[in-house]
Length: 295
Image (tube, rainbow, N blue to C red; front, side, top):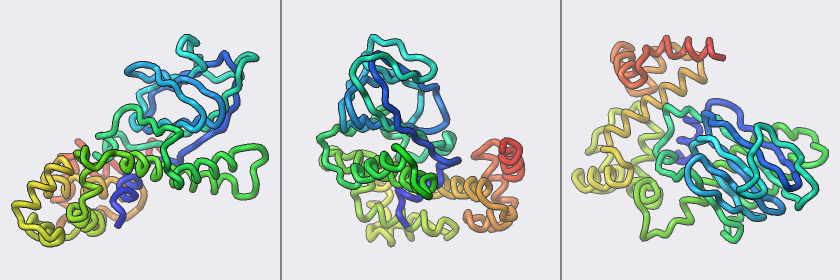
């Protein structure tokens, strides 16, 4: 079980979307806050990101910026250009070509992998990430000019891959000696063994001792190391992941509540319902019906 892929899949609540746009200065556009994450790639020219918090960020061709918590932001040719509510083609100045996209994520269940990230993640043009660059080139190709057969399916699959490569590039670019939190966990083979076990088999009656055995560590050493990197004790993370798994099953399947309870590690539907309500503030059946009504 790939922990990073699994975590992303559990947070996703809808289809991602992307567009490729050419503008001429002066131009500016504002993006409203949303329940998800967004990215921009400068394919040609240059521009400025105007984040919700902090100073403008200058972007040049090849730069990739990812916003894991879409707090609202703007893009413009210069910081002095006021962003508009909708993107226009601008004036007769220098050309900028952009590849922009967004992902819908369950903000109530954001995995710690995302909550630890900064509001703005910049991957400069000079950083060597061949897989990320390849995915960008393929996606830009699908969204440019005349779409070929299957373009919608190809773009959707490439957006999924791009999100994974964005996060992988960010974590891989962190100096190993400065790792903390999940950056450290992803580099720690023993902690990753335990995390893979939890993600692959959340219904198993795990204990700290049994997870320590999977990691090949003593109970005390494992508990300390897991808590220091993951940010929560082993059983606390297990419970969080079980509830995340349950929410995903309620959202994406029509399994009866008894089956959802069993797959989430609860021997009885009553115990599951009690734990779920404590975590989400509502009963699992009501949670599912609310999603159906919203849909």
